[in-house]
Image (cartoon, rainbow, N blue to C red; front, side):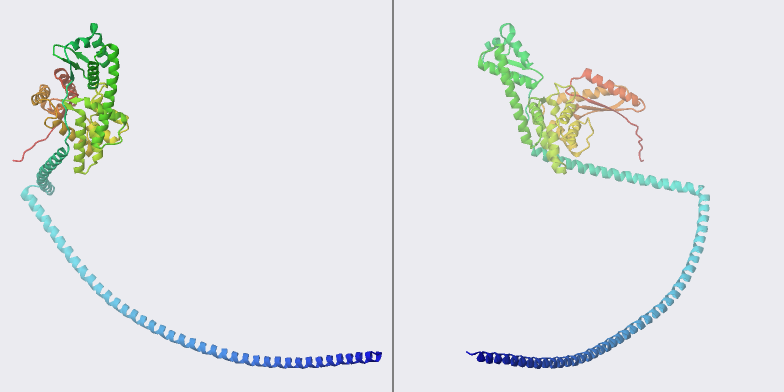
Length: 512
């Protein structure tokens, strides 16, 4: 292509660019004008709408204010009506109060007139009363105070007499009811208990196969029998009784060990000091085991648990202890069961009564080894092995040495007496029993100043009534000591006897 052609093309392009620019500028100016026109129209329309909404809001506000004003007017009218009604009611109340006040004033005036009349009547009555008193004093020759004292005394005497009669009737009725109830309870308790009684003595008899065995038991120059007695502490009595040896001793456990030892020696046939010692040890172990089993069986039979092992062992020793021929272990079991049954009937603690009943004679297991009464020993043992204070108190009070303070203590005391007094329980004859009681009373009544004596507690206690005009308090102490010495020197008795001297002054009168 020629330069001219290039020049034409270039010029044409420039023209085209200029024409395009002009066209775009024209179009832009047209759009701008249209946009300004549209914006102006929109502003006008918005202004018109705003004015219209403003007018509507103003109208709505005016309508709401008008409505609120009408509501307030109605409420004010209603309040004014209520106030008017309240004011009317208050006025009516004031009028009613004025009327009532007037009525009250009239009543007060009427009451005052009545009070004046009553005062006049009272004054006249007092004057008449004074005149009557003066006249009565003149007629009776007694002053008012003297007459009143006499009248009160008569009334008091009459009331006391009637009260005493009523108390006596109540006491008699209560005693009858109590006796009946007590008999029923005791009968039921005895029926529920069926304890056995075993009568034993202080000697044991061992049968021999032949009389030649006696010589072997004695041994050369008596060495066998001496060894036997030294080991066991029991006396062997070998006399003319055919085919029998008597073992005598106060300790029942030692006597039982000696019996088993002798039986083992007889069965073995070899009797010499060495063999005696060997058999003694075996018998001792058997007896100790048997004692423990008997104690455990006693606690099992009564249902008493938690007893110290040493107390269980002492319970087992009671199997070999007797009181008037009554086995003490069987007696303790019976007392536990009877006391428990009575406690159930009376609403007391049956477990406490049962435990105390089982342990009440525990001191008898060692009373031949320790100085003191079986009651004191039993209390010390129970305290040593951590028994409860209630059980200790029952043990201390079961013979009346300590005054019973609990229902269970009374029940154990009663059960002990019941068990001892049951027919066949003890082998002591009636004649011996009565003779001992009479002897106690005779010793007491032989002293000057004694009015009457009573042997109680199966001969364990004697109560002596003295004449207060002959024996004073200091003399009572001397008399008790004197009677104790007389009993100790003139009588044979088991355990101990309590001597109680009672001195009292009584005022006695009779209604004619």
